Image (cartoon, rainbow, N blue to C red; front, top):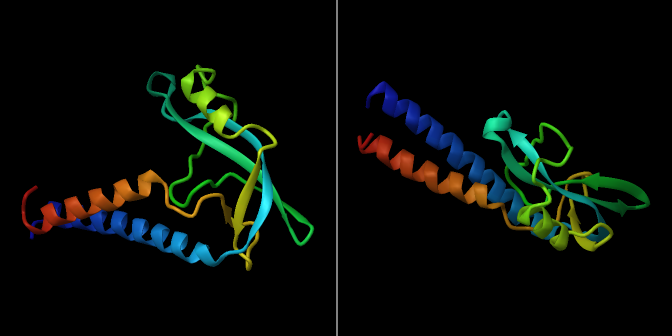
Length: 152
């Protein structure tokens, strides 16, 4: 196997490994207890690139309490979490995406929060991994197959 194919295979393995870990975390979280929480904020933010290549993502922040201790988190699903360059709403955030997000997660909306009983700061709103995890898994499998069979 050539060095480029080995490099692609290693990258594919990392992508598949990450995806499998996130899917496993989502499956384990099915045993986590839940508490009532509420939406604190929901906004569309710029997460990467400069202004000419602006990437947008959604940040949903919620709060909840476990044994009287308050917690705040912004993980909606397992998987890649957006890392905003700025928590200031992105240009055009009042567009369709911003309006849709605000309608789905209005401030003060009650939500069911699943939390890790060993680390209550570790929480999630939905027990299914986000779409990016599935994309990484499929892409990793496809590139891994291509690397092994010399299709690159």
